[in-house]
Image (cartoon, rainbow, N blue to C red; front, top):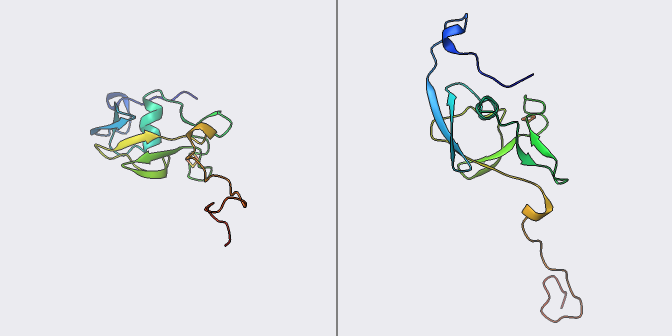
Length: 122
Ligand code: FES
């Protein structure tokens, strides 16, 4: 299956499209009112927008909100399922990854012999 949009003029239903524009990592992406964020991304030719911990590309897998493969950040809200959120004009979408390099730095290990080590019992 290839991601593409049926043009309104050739759609047998006779729908009236209302365009919208979102930004994805600072790049403008055009869509149609009623599309999910994943729909906008797929119609724009983006098949993946995230990386799993292994570095494997992720995008839409289930398309119904079950697998969490399509996570994005929308207006600062992390872990939004792109397949479940309708795009709104002006949405600011940023991609996110779970690769070890993108994970926040973890706490330093506890050194039981160091007097001020975090977590050390006194
Ligand atoms: S594609 Fe599975 S939750 Fe969005």
